[in-house]
Image (cartoon, rainbow, N blue to C red; front, side):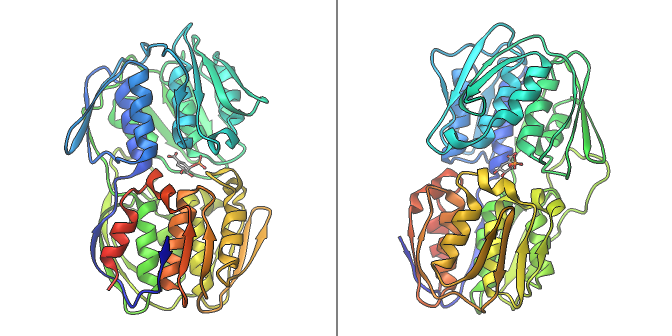
Length: 429
Ligand code: S3P
């Protein structure tokens, strides 16, 4: 699909519902004792996989026009499905669901997915779940298909070698049924949607610096959840507005939880014009997910450095930091982001090859990249490698380029943002 240079972008837009929060709402709904109503559930490929997975496990799911209702099985009563659970392309489902399955004493489950999922490591969840008392096996000890046999779980303390909200969340879900209080530590803070939702569901959750403790509970009662707009999906529109001269956009109801708003803070540091009421870092854990409108305008940018402690707060937007870097004055560097190599694709290789093909001066490092800003991009062809975020980055690059961009594999946007191309087209004037 081709994206021609745009004269300017303007108008108003509502970003699609948050993918991370939708996955968690469906999973916690399935684990809860009473029905959970989810308003603004994301209807995309990844989150459809989660609804199917919880159905396979015995939850009843009703998809209504403006909400999804999940009638769960309770914490310990997931049903053993006939065959493997298909997680599709969804790494979050692959990593979070086993935390619940580990508690299903004496029952066995297999998780599998597409070719990309089969390259995503699961050893970091297998190790703590085994210590807690589940039996876990993976292909070559590391990759899906993943088998989990539930057990009676012990509470543990564990320190993650790499900050990961997915791994942390897996252990916290298992902790709900363990025999005491479980603590997870991370080298840097990652998104805390699981902690906030567990707090709302009545679980004992405490944060102390980089550590989170969850106390076991008898049941979860979540009531209803309203999913905010996805900050990661909104980020593509934000960047389009910042890069295309003369643009002015309003993006409504975006989630601005501070553990997700790292990208907006980086953009402001680069002198990008984005007005909005971002959440300040909270010491105490809070149950709510704050939202804000974002008012975006085109403007000149300066290069910046993103260090390891900031990476988990903007992990999915780092390809966009590279794209911004192409247009900024000076150098833009990202370090400590080796996790990008094991996302839906190797995002360091994909971003560097993709942007270079459009005329960027960008070098890969082991754990990130360095871009020398040249004031713009020529254009050309970008291969998305089946990765939704690379495809959408390519589309935005096209609008801001001199000659336009052909994206190979635009279909993959449906993983997180099915209406992306239409939404973008509606803003172009
Ligand atoms: C996610 C966490 C991030 C992110 C992914 C969604 C989540 O992964 O890249 O798209 O919903 O917990 P890690 O924190 O595991 O790196």
